[in-house]
Amino acid sequence: MPSDDRPAPQRSSRPLAIRLAGPIRWLHTYLSMFGLVAVLFFSLTGITLNHPGWFYDGVATDVEAEGRVDPALLRGEADRLAIVERLRAEHGLRGALASFTEDEDECVVTFKGPGYSADAFIRRPEGTYRLAEHRHGLVAVLNDLHKGRDAGPVWSAVVDLSAALTGLAAATGLLLLFYIKRRRALGLATALAGAVALAAAFLLGVM
Figure 1 (cartoon, rainbow, N blue to C red):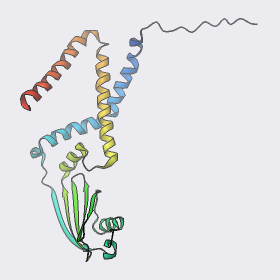
Figure 2 (figure 1 turned 180 degrees about the vertical axis):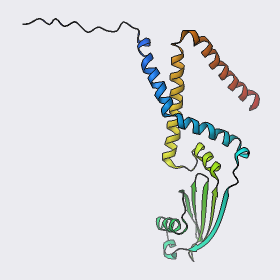
Figure 3 (figure 1 turned 90 degrees about the vertical axis):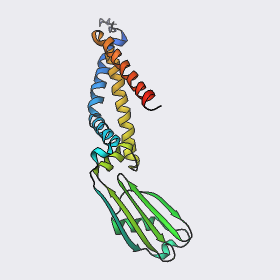
Figure 4 (figure 1 turned 90 degrees about the horizontal axis):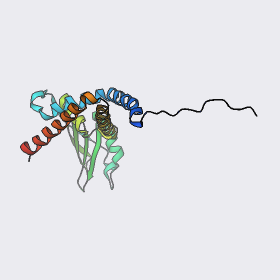
């Protein structure tokens, strides 16, 4: 049989920590770039949320309307889907259905979205209703998106993903600091100073 003269594969003699530097750097760079817009969004809306008086745009619209649904939809257990679709089609309501409550005399249907709410009060015997719709300005919409309030499950997932990306970018940035000997001590001292400043702000200004 012919002999196999191929050289045996050489294993890297570099320590594992050194070999991980490249992947960590790659991960840090592209996580930061992928989440850049989200970080900017949540940073800026953090300011608008913390200081609503600075950015209040004065745009708020309150609309009241009246109408009627088929009383047959309200007999016994109300046909919720038909009623909700009727209200949406008639008044162009947006937002998700937040609640639908029933008692003997009245049904109350509530829609909510970022910077938006609408309530319909429906009289069961007659089918007549009164609608109150509230549309707030852009700043209110952005603030609600920052909090994930009334924005639906998709946006809730965006908030969670943005938080995870930010955390991973910070963690990989910290790991990269350990590969830079000249700046390691100063970098760690700066991170510690930031943590102490945050804790002091909480203890002295909140507790």
